[in-house]
Image (cartoon, rainbow, N blue to C red; front, side, top):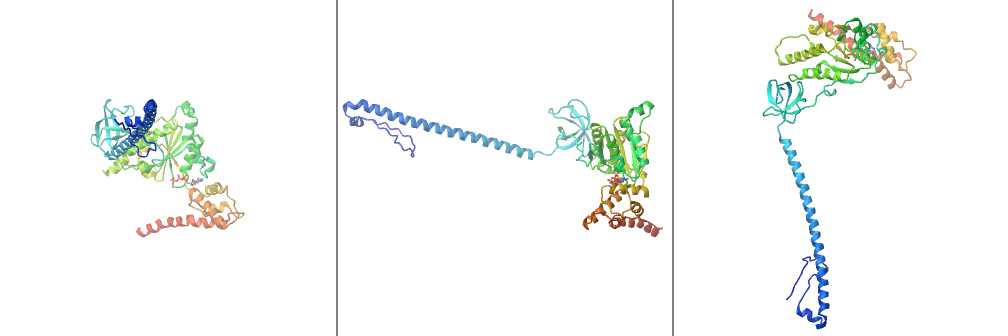
Length: 429
Ligand code: ATP
């Protein structure tokens, strides 16, 4: 009989074949048979150890392969989910108009019509309050997700400054207007009890009218600084949106943001873009502007005049504003910001050149005389431009020569503009 055990490993250095038989036993001689058996047992143990090692190694390899397979399966699953996600149809954006019960809401899709739809059980009913923006399934229009509010100022081009660094002494020539705005916008924030004691309500909104660059924004910023209020500036045209209901929602969120950041000075520039007199031309665009304005009026009517949000609006076309806006309780205080006169221009020059090194020949009153019709913004531009000329020429200070050139550069063109309308008018007269 012959028993053969092989490790099956061709690289194995030790021979793993063990022969057991009478002929092999005979080689040890009759008396050596026990030694032969002992030898045999030792060899078999050796082979057994080798085989155990081999089995363990194979088991380790098997485990590693198993792990690898699991890892790849996970990866495949993830990629499949990603593909699935990319294949899912987009959600329709809508706005919750009304909550009917804990299963149904009325939503208005961005295309216009309203729908009664269900909402996913995963949505907290409190989150789906009227006015919230939601994502709707394309097929059933069911509310699938609640979208975050767009109160982020950068989203709609709002400017938000915690407390602007502008003081009244940085505004030239508007003393009367400063006094007036202090009374109607600053005092209600700093000393509301004075109004309460007398029993009058401060005006809710102040309207600044005047040409661009005359300092309207500057004035509003100074009020915010004095009252340590947050300054939010939004341009009227940004509130007019393309889609139905968007503008109104934006106005709502703007006021919510103002209340959240209170005390706040809410500055609406170019108010005429959203509040021009209503003309029924029947277009959707026109209706949308009106809807935005109605929301603005509703917000103004709805807030407390003694609260800590003050609205200051600005326009250079007060003539086209809807009279509804100017009614008592709305923008009932109008402050006209004039183009600076000679004295004011001198003051504005003084403000903008205060940190500049001026030559001995520079006379601010002469500069004021040379800049008739210039606004505060023009004067600022002239001062900066004169400084640039001096830098270019490597001068130690800015001299009259640079100012004269800057005046020609900045308002030379504008003065031509002043002439043109007259000439054109004469042609058609
Ligand atoms: P717009 O209607 O275009 O918004 P605005 O009337 O609000 O114009 P501001 O933005 O306040 O004008 O002014 C522009 C810049 O002009 C200001 O940053 C400021 O440097 C300068 N400026 C305007 N008016 C004055 C002023 N009265 N005193 C000092 N600087 C002024």
